[in-house]
Length: 67
Image (cartoon, rainbow, N blue to C red; front, side, top):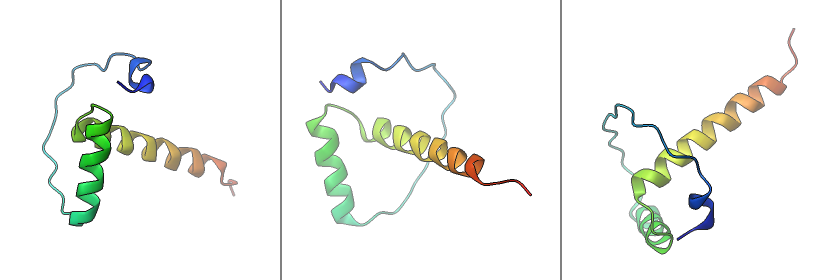
């Protein structure tokens, strides 16, 4: 199991909603391989990726000078 997953705090149970997206077949295959090699679900990967991207976006927004 991936060591980074072992160090994460437990995720609180929250209400979930379905998200359906279309992605290129090659990208899906890469995603499936990546997740299988790391014993994680695609849902876990996508959720973590969205959280990371949003945190980065907020950090970048805060760096902009205010007028």
